[in-house]
Length: 188
Image (cartoon, rainbow, N blue to C red; front, side, top):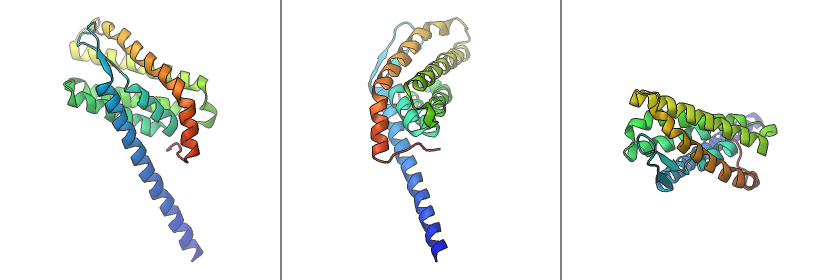
């Protein structure tokens, strides 16, 4: 009888954890999409107009607080969905891979309790910046067939990640504390 109760309690915790993961991740997918779609500026300098948006802010926050899976899904699906629904359809497969890798990397680099500090957040965000710049450079070479055209997009990508990094670094500590207070945790 006691063994059955232990098994039932373990099963209930697993279901609760799965529901929490799905709920939190869905919220960060939606936030990433909304911040990308509605808080943005089109740039006239890039080959396809370019876009600076704040979609990376919820992506980074989700990855740091909830881990690599939430970061990867929120980034890839949230921004990929934006591309599909906003006329940037050609970019969607590239965005899905590049931004999912950014979210995964930020979550992976900050998942260890010893890496929950400003220094590691900065390292994680710089890594995301490198992935974004290199990933979209390669994507533009593939799309445009020209290795020089993508150079015009690099400043916009740097500004986009830089602004998102500053905002994230300002808000992440209190958000991390709040998440722990209400019992939310990383999903491994």
